[in-house]
Structure formats: structure tokens, C-alpha cells
Length: 232
Image 1 (cartoon, rainbow, N blue to C red):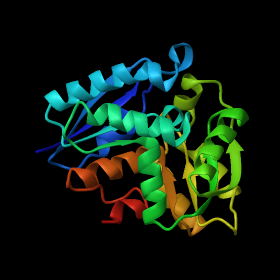
Image 2: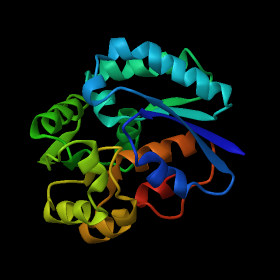
Image 3: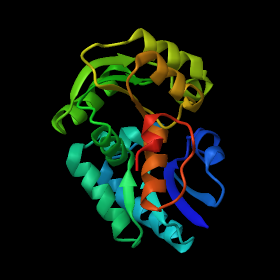
């Protein structure tokens, strides 16, 4: 049996619905929730003790790989914030660790995506801030599409078809691929169709973290969910 651990915002309702339900036989997920978004949003430095404690609980469960899974938080303070999150987890477990930002970058790199169209449910300001993170990391954000949905309830209520339509409408000839950012949206059902329509790879927050964790745990992968899931 392989075990993956996920540290997620308490407001997230899509990790279990999207990620856990597609786990292959022989793989289980263990989830720790932290109050870190909305009214509970705080600087990374203040979040680190809770992240370390959550990683320790997942280490107690003998997880083979652990992720801090929140796109906005893992990109909010640039590479420095990302590294501090990784260090906090690594101090609490000997298992491989990742963040959403780390997993997305690994996915983009292994797919040779250096320029991409970015789609989010966030406000324009938050989306542009995330674009700066990726630009500073050496990528070219060819376009930013911010749907400006009204918080977690709206994120969860958005049908997969909304993301499919938005991504297909945002086709960019100068993009190597596309990034759909946010761990609290439902999109697994359309990843393969979007890739078929765009003829380019699509990376999503939940998909990339699932890929990174299963890869680190040397566990089987789902048979669908885009080009990324088939990459060794």
C-alpha cells in the first residue's frame, strides 16, 4: 500500500472529490486541513508552525510523499516563501515533500512548457500576482484570464464545462501549454478534452500535485488526466 499526504485549506472541497476518488488501487490519501484562506489568511512565516505540525501528523500516518497543497499560498511570497514551506515540512518528515507551486513548475518543466496561458477563478490582482511568481521563476505568461469568482463557494459550484470553454476560448499560438490554477475547482473531467482541442498540454493544480506525489511515492498513476500523468 502506498500513502500520499495532503495539507490543504480547510475551505477546500475539491481535493477529496477530484483527487482522492481517482487514486489507483493500492494508493490511499490522508488529508490534513489548515485554516489559511479567506479570513484566516496570514503571512507564510505565521503559517509555518501549523504546516510543520500537519506534516508531522501525516508522517505519523506513514505517508510516502506529502504536499502542502494551496496554489495561492505556495506562490504568494515567491521562491523564498515556497522554500520555507518545503523546509517546514522536511523538518517534520523524511518523506519527499512538495508544494503546489513546486509541483506545477516540475510539471511545466517536464512537459517543456516555457510559455503558457494562465486561467484562474481568482481576481485580476491575485492572478497577476501569481503570474509574477511564474515570470520570476523564468516562465513566460502569455496571457492571464481571471474569472473573478466570488470565493470558495463559487469556485466549487463552477462546472467543469466553464474551465473547458474558457481554456478553449483562450487559445494562444505563442503558448507551449496552459495552466489552470486553483486546488478548489472541478476540472478533471475535461482535461483530456481540453488537450485534444488545444493540441497542447494542460497543467492544473490538482493534477500536477497528484502526479508529483504519486511519482515521489513510486505509486501507480491514473490512466487519464492529460499528457502529464503518463510522463515517467
